[in-house]
Image (cartoon, rainbow, N blue to C red; front, side, top):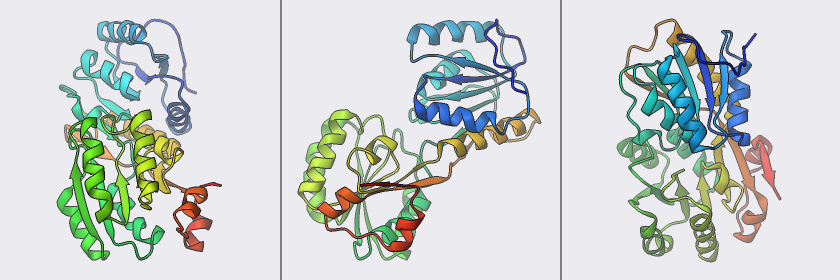
Length: 290
């Protein structure tokens, strides 16, 4: 049975640290708890910088043997205070900019595999062959050459647009939309916030261009279709990775794994854009938005 304690840190223990009680983090935690057979202590940072600092100081003083951190706040704490500790991070979109010194690290990426997203894209939008991809190289971990190669194999033309700041979004979006049939957007704390999501959706819909993404927020705020991470699967993979780290596996300094995808289809936006999803994909979708 898992040990979920509130007492002081014990050197060598396993800790599960949640950035907050956001539903996606709780789902990751549920997947972890149902698949991790060892003892662990669960710690909630409650979205608080003060709690992050206090927990970081506590764990730095008595280093755990293994840490599983969920979300950006927990990952940032781990970077600063858990140097050398074997670690698994999940659902942390800013992790690519963090440097985890010393110990072995396994990351469960915050989106399904980009190659798997690409494979389903032409199935979702038959006949739409010109794809524009918005991403920030600081945060999105993708293999440009591999995606270009796979796009060609699928009969797609992929135009990849690099964004280095949110200020670049309006201009580059205006240039891109007339040239593409689908806009593919990667989860990114630079590009995606409440204002930019609204802007992206309004501009794309006005131009008759559907949005495809792997971001949970954008999926529910105007994307036509999305393959978002299965959070419980991310937790299950974190449990497996943690078990293997505890056994001394993972020779590489950092290993990146991808969660399974959950297909979300927005029928309301699709009708507006005169997009008809193939029946097999409608039946496969884990969620339909009407």
